[in-house]
Image 1: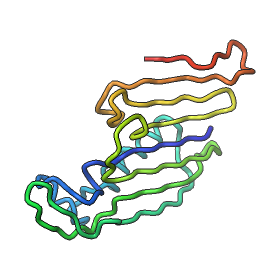
Image 2: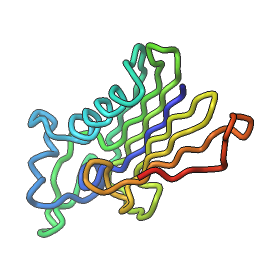
Image 3: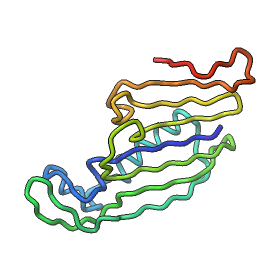
Length: 157
């Protein structure tokens, strides 16, 4: 099984941050895109796809200075805002994860989990475009055309 996971990290990781979260720009405080979104992502993937056996990752801080939204004040930012991970599951499957902080996009590509195997693929997306655990979500199962009883797609709620 191959697994792909993409998520946005708002409000963490972008060029602006709400005043209530300005303290999170100091990575020593423990709340960042890496610790919050990264941790939740790995927990979901471990549950859905199985144990991650090998991993290689890159983190980047594209905004070493951020603007506090309400005040316009500039604040030093030491927390990474981009995460890219590739690895292998204990089962031998390949896994890829991207978490983009401070995304200004809206729509269905903000978050998804896709599990693909030899007999089909399972796509999980929140209906609101938010995070999986904050919104109702759709699960779409697409069976391979050659699989007995296979159909183009079945929506499971």
